[in-house]
Length: 414
Image 1 (cartoon, rainbow, N blue to C red):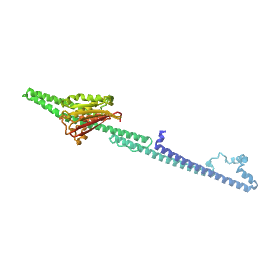
Image 2: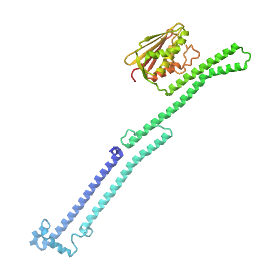
Image 3: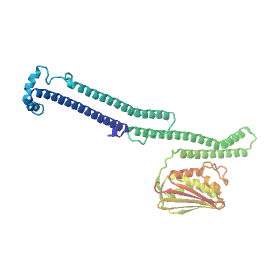
Image 4: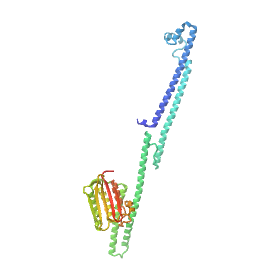
């Protein structure tokens, strides 16, 4: 029975058992003592009667003694008829038998005292046991109230056996989960605040430029058609930048908030690499950068094609921007029993050693950044995408010689 696992129940059963044994033992010795007293009184009484009769009739000694030992049945009825005249028979109450009444009263007194002591001790131990139970309940109630007030400290005693220990364990689990949920809500609040500040900061410059261009075109009537067209073109550039900023910041926000569900499917990694190159061919052509591919066309690994394409595009775009005119970018991939590895390397100016640990940080721009519109979230998004698929990304670089990005996509979940 589960109830017997509770230490309080075990303690109560043990105490009651001990008290019952003690009470039984006291009652047994009391009754035994009473029986011994009655036996002693009866023997004394018989001895006195025998002595008195034998003194008068010595010749009847053997017959008289026999009636008080083992042959009393022969004269029992005759004696009964004699004593009946004096109301002395088997119906005589103990309280009227002055020889036994005193011992009987003592026995009753002892048994009564024993029962009272047994009751008092039993009540005392029950009070102590239940006080222990209810003190724990009061402690749990105080802790529950503290949880409501925002104090999520654990209650001690969750390792003890029994229902109360299990209750404490469950309350501690609930408290821990509530604490995690509250912390998650707090982090989400901080995250939202930070994202809003980032968006506000990043949009401030192009928005200010747009306002300025608009005021100039609206208030300056001396502008030539060529100058006006220049402002319109610059406004379009700023609007394009704002659109790009908003799209990428929203991507980053979705990834950071953990609301992106990656659609993992078996796909050829070479096809994903080709997809990532499509929107970058024009940029590479403008800088006369040659992108060379090397790898098998039959390397299959589970990954989210769209998001992984985005990750590869960000790396390749970064390599193109930091490559010298006429430089080369090499993209290769291979596999082993554990993962598929994709290496993207350029021959650009490289990254200083002290900046390598920070290039995946959000909004970090290196000292060698050559794109004034770069806000430093591309590689951060890439790292988040790769790690969100249980992959990993590494970077190594030598100043003046180039940079290598290594992406590993696991074949089996970690």
